[in-house]
Image (cartoon, rainbow, N blue to C red; front, side, top):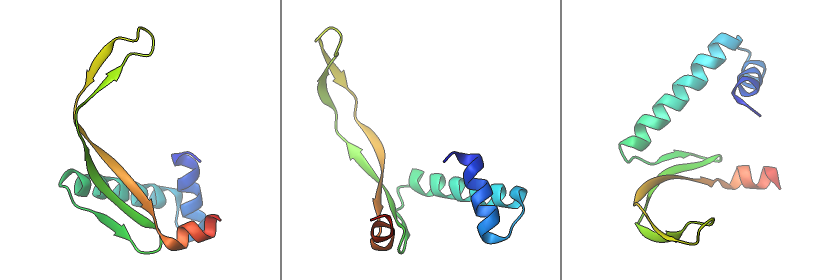
Length: 90
């Protein structure tokens, strides 16, 4: 499912126009991104939670040449599915 299909699904499930559903989805994405940038954790009960984790610097290998390279430290976004989401998928 891409963004357009998700907007259509939100519009039909919530009884909104596609324009309003797109605004709502864009607002959710912006708010989530801003909160994660600040280091906050986002919990949606029953759905799951988004958090930031720090990945330390490490040594890796270039798969084409086999040469060792340094991989820089970075922050990564993690999502942990909630119990209701997990049970509905299974």
